[in-house]
Amino acid sequence: MENPTTIQEIVQRLDKLTPAQQKQILNSVLSFLGEPIRGTPSKELLKFVGLFPPEDLEQIKRAIEEDCGQVDESEW
Image 1: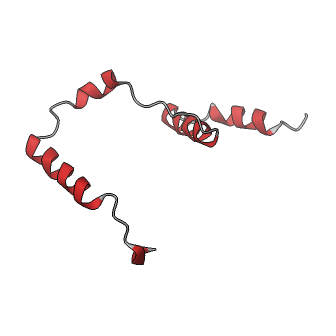
Image 2: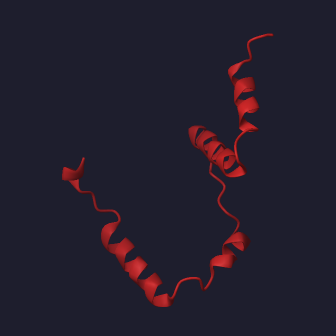
């Protein structure tokens, strides 16, 4: 039996991954190539509408606005 090329070996192993894992691999490849990563279609996100109370969403929004974008230099 011939030694498979790297590409052939990757393709063979991809079949053993779950669809979610395959999507992660695709996103990684797209990222390496500098290509845009395709997100989740909006119609798939509609199932989450109304899942969280508005008060919780406001609290999450405030936490993101207050904490994101801040770097704690001592943490690294």
